[in-house]
Length: 319
Length: 247
Picture (cartoon, rainbow over the protein chains, first blue to last red):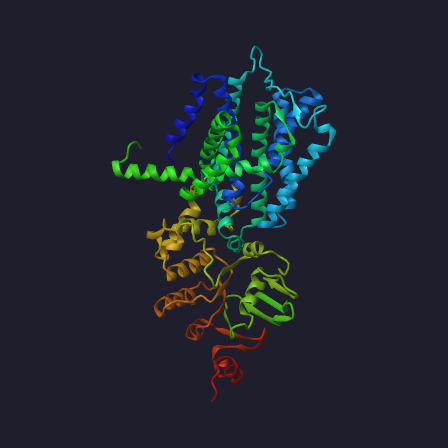
């Protein structure tokens, strides 16, 4: 594997806060969080071929764990919130996977959708899950790392997210290139043959679903700190929709596709909300149609092809 | 030694008995062919033995173990391998990926999550060796869909052999092949190691009579004859209903 582009990408993300205002750092933080969310979704949809419409259930659960710890127990210590913020969404995914993977295809989509909406209405209706007098939980503060003489601010929080993002990238990259990851692609391409050569395909799908849920939970956890606020909508369809759009726009089943999808999505969304706040859904729709028409396999794949073409014409630019 | 023993096997689709009270057993190393006109229940029988379908009634034993309620992948781990009638290879994946994925299926490290697939040298070498013998090593990076039909067949059968099964289920191995390609397949089956038991279904009688040591004739889901190729050839009932030859 050629690691040079990856190293360059990592370094750019490392030094970029030095040149940016707090606002822009926040935006890049948001991008990394959603890129992680979209990558986790890509494991289930892109690699395994399971179209889930309830992935926000795990994202939102991660966020709610952080918010509830803050609201009811006044816990802000990262070393307590982190394990719970990962374990609870993982457990939720383990439970939902048992239910949803009893069926496949369109029924899987419907069941995941229903489970996500169930959490949405639970969060909407249960008093304990809301701040007093509102829907959702507000006032979440940045995590306390309990390092003497260190105060967390938005720039340091960016680096915390950066660490999670890079670590997750490395783990997920290893995952998709392992025998386990190859088997997921085999299931996407032909599940009955996978069974016929000895794979317990149900178990593979289940594990992929749970692992994906765990990473979505991490993304949700990081998001609630970033956003200061979680609401029921972070568990429901409108949020489940986001990683799907990002993964499809960037390139399903490719490793970096969802990251590129998230990049385009977050930055276009930002510009749109500055200049034409009412028109963002329309612009997203238009953007999506254009991508599906001209770069169906995703922007990531499209750019990769152009790069290859340039390389072929001018010889290898760099190795 | 009995490899496979099927007792009173019944498979009902609605009111149709696709396989109707079939009982037979296969000895180790035997090359058994199942023939019969279209719709006789041959592929259904294969699906029951390999576990793609569940039985309505009856038992299946594999090396003395009752496997009736085991899933396909569990049967594969016990030593079954199958080549399908319709090519079942992963069309979009490359030849080498197909080989690696097939060979990994029965390996204990198929659940490994953090080591790249290509680092498992033992499986890679086995894949390389298999593709070399199949004469497909040069095309290892081609997606399977770009191969010629005969090459796909060869790959499919070759890969199921590379799984080193105890029982090989061949569903119409010569379907759609030219004479020359068909004889490649015949050679492949004839050269099976003596410890591999083969069960095959085919329409190509020349091939069946050349490779099979025993033949079972299936008609409307029932066994109407079971014996050596010579016996089958001279069985009057078989001639009438299956070959349509009157003497």
